[in-house]
Amino acid sequence: MSLMPELPEVQTVVNHLSEHLPGRRVTAVNVSWHRSVAVPSHRLFVQQISGCRFDSVARRGKYIVVSLTSGLHLLAHLRMSGDLIVRDAAEPHSKHERVCIDLDNGQQLRFVDTRKFGRLYLVKHREDVLKDLGPEPLAEEFCAQLLLDRVKERRSPIKVLLLDQTVVAGLGNIYVAESLWRAGIHPLARVQRLSTERVRKLCESIREVISEALKASGTDLGDGVWKKGAYVPKAYGQAGTPCVRCGRTMRHMVVAQRSTDYCPQCQRR
DNA sequence: ACCACAACCTGGCCGC
DNA sequence: TGCGGCCAGGTTGTGG
Image 1 (tube, rainbow, N blue to C red):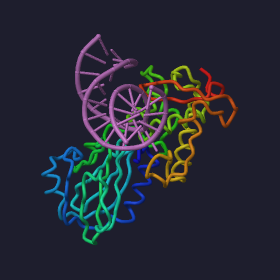
Image 2: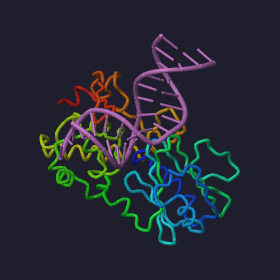
Image 3: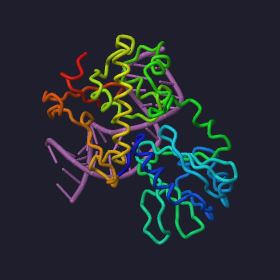
């Protein structure tokens, strides 16, 4: 039914938009669910973006960042079910389309969002929205030392810290589960109790998992229209099945009010 | 600082 | 077929 995106899925959307948006001009805008526009008011949003020309498309954490030649920036956060697609105007519209932007070549940029949690932001300065985000997991600077520096005062379980976008940007419930499984770290582990070597291993695992998922265009959970992704989770959603590394039955628990699957053998407390 | 929980929404699935 | 309850890849705000 829907896309529920973390970094690799967002990047896949960005790649799609990059093929179609640069150079296109906005000729008309229709906002059918006002609250999909976070900022400014939906009225000003339509006013300000009309006539603008799209420049480049990028990603920061789970945000899509579209630069306009006017200097404004269109940012999107897809939250649980959002998607941004470019279609010919003649193609049928989704029942869950919330915003539709007409382009000067007969195509449309459509914001589709079943659950209505996603948000668009039209801002002068992108940092107004992005300033609190932590480092990109694939950035050169992302390493054990940086991670430790950012969480040295915090005693929350490692899973909670990795879900915190100010610690590291772009991970969500799937890729946190995958990274912890790959690194052999229990979701409830406290960072202070981990050796530097294991934190290093964790950072490396995060990089590997994210890189692999990017190559695969994200994860397809088999329940929706997000059929592009070929990444196969080894921990997320695997409770009750044998661990592909050791064969032990994967377990389930709740951490930070989120469903959490792990291997009791590979990820010992 | 930390935690639990509600809110924001819709729809799919499961059991009865 | 229908209905209630539970679940969902995210984030923010509140109150303890």
